[in-house]
Image (cartoon, rainbow, N blue to C red):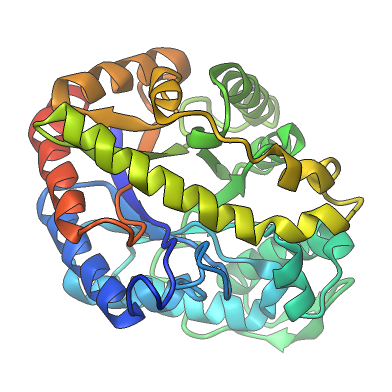
Length: 352
């Protein structure tokens, strides 16, 4: 089992200025690199406290690439619906070269109505834009004189520059929140997956992983070569009471941020997002202790969190990659540093 970290900002100017947040991300990424974590990744969101300090993951990851040497750099995820594929393929290939082949590309569909409205894009087009964006990027990375005639974009012949450092292209991940169909499609295509362990039950994750791994095998891909990343908020401290205290505060503030971001779903429907119109009504969040008991949040002493990770490995396989959300911006950066240090001292030697 490998461990990485995720930056998912949940702050705005009232809590922390962006320059300070980015400096802290660099600080934590440098520490994670020294401590031999597997990856650092970040999201793409806009104008809400929920992720809005990371509107372009490529920019932040490029800065992190300059301050690190071995840790992999992941998007979690870039949104093809919001970027022309020629531009997206080019800037990702540029980051792959700047990092000397450390890039993992996660693609996502996005799900916030206000973001689609700002880009003047119909949510009903999200799936086709997503599928075409991935296919176009992979083609631009791996072939020359590319001609593309899609539903949403037409271009070519184009030979994208720079060519990716990794050949034929960087590893591709599909970010999926709840959809079983997305897991099946990723398995058939031979793509890796990123899932949010913090929002799904054990049974839901097991069902989705079973569907994904079955589709992977049935499509003729070599079993065991697929990569699965599961993300969880993580708060580790020698004092378990303190870990749960700061975790409860961070969880509360994160809940407030996502509540504001999904509010517009109460007046929105989309055939591409069945059931999401009820999302704003479903934000009653369990208490932190219940989330810890369900292994949806990792919090406590190193021994307590080690027991949680052992259970996760038993449930989902010891080959999954855990991505620890360690810095929303709501807590002092020292809390994230403590989590990284203790994970490196106690968990990586045990599970790595």
